[in-house]
Length: 187
Image (cartoon, rainbow, N blue to C red):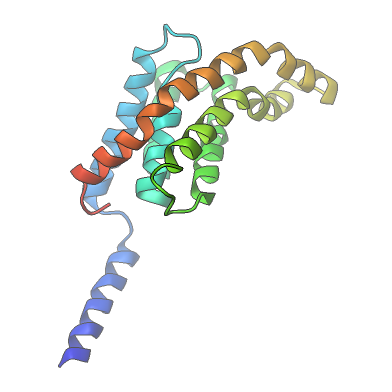
């Protein structure tokens, strides 16, 4: 009887996995993506300072691969709001880079190390934002390598502000992870 229950539980788990994302998580991820978008709008007056990196790192730590859902809700809302113009094209991959780097981090880090690592990753993404953005600009505007490097150099000051801003707000990553885990016990 015990092996029959175990097989039944495995079968249920397999069916859930095949079904994909549940309605519950569609709603949760839509709300989280909208929250990311609204937080960016509310902070637009600040030069390259926003909570998007904080959200992406925290959501990736908690939801792993499923964090792509709220990230792309944010990307879609940004395009709908501000227009699907050439500046938006890098948004299709630039936030995924931060997600990917966070996915590569060990799942279990010592409590004293995790905030430092998460902050470093978040800040590095801000410092490298223009460099990550540049290949799309080069392709869209026909820049050669020298033109792309010039574009990167011209944006170094903005990237410096972006990295410092990400570092400053990164203190919110661990509390956000804890809050999400407390609210969503299934995560």
